[in-house]
Image (cartoon, rainbow, N blue to C red; front, side, top):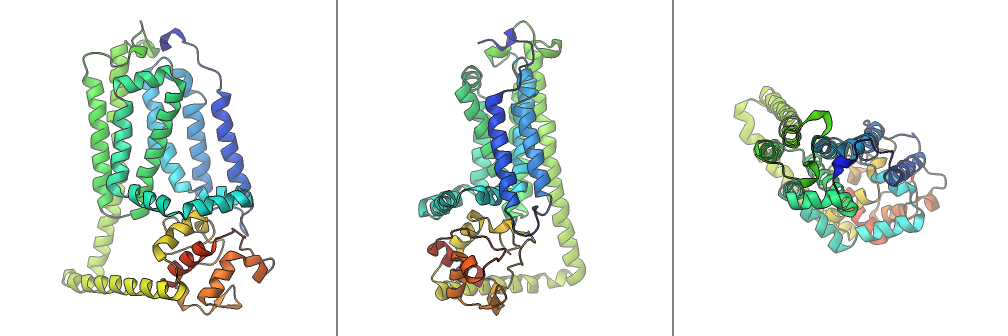
Length: 389
């Protein structure tokens, strides 16, 4: 099919619009079930709304009409998915709202599946810098090879898979960056800009068009097919690279500020004692986790994953959990030093497991929702919380 035969903008695609409407409805319903304040903190509601707006513009209207006649417009669509929609969704962290929106049996099933060993092991494997970077780069390069790109233009199923892989691997890329927040992120982003820019440069400097569907007698804006491809390559090379570099410079600025603050407070002569204290702290953390395992019979590492799976960050601030900065419920820092659960129940591992299993049975009317946490997951969550000292 030659996309140049259709030069009029396409109407709104109802099949693409419907999933966005369903996702928005689930989010709003889940958010309405939050106890206490009816919104998520830190601009997450706005980020989710902005992500839906980007997805609408990219996949529903108006960009799909332009992508039929312009490779450059198609590149803008891909850049919006990777550099706008994906990081906004990671920032919004909507999984807590979706979990609250699900019927109880489905919520129980989802929590149980997340607790399976193979799924947790798989997530730990891909949620690493090298894996996240490599999977995203592979998706970008593979789908822009002439054979796969042309096949996706001709087959709608492959086109959907292409966009899904861009959004999914980009989400993983940004989630890994947000979840670790360390100085390696500068290199992580800089090399991402290099590989994206290299592909854009190859496209820009190619002496001939790559994709037959964009080789008709003319394209949008009166560009020749080769000029349209050169513009598409320039968009991937320069504006996209600038986004990566701006985020990397932001990380660098924050890192330098932290070093400067530490230098002002301690001086260079204090770095070795600080390092020694850090090592002691890490050793103490290991002891805390061992003690928590002994007390609860659970595993703190699995507990971290369960806390995310059951949507606890939607309501609580929890040290060591990415994105857990909500203030709907009380903060869970220094949990092991507390005397009571919910103000009246003695803070023991067994009581905490009971509370996680059925809070309404212990304190009817409590704002803590009943999430049907399995006993194994409750013990794992307890193990993580009791390691917080």
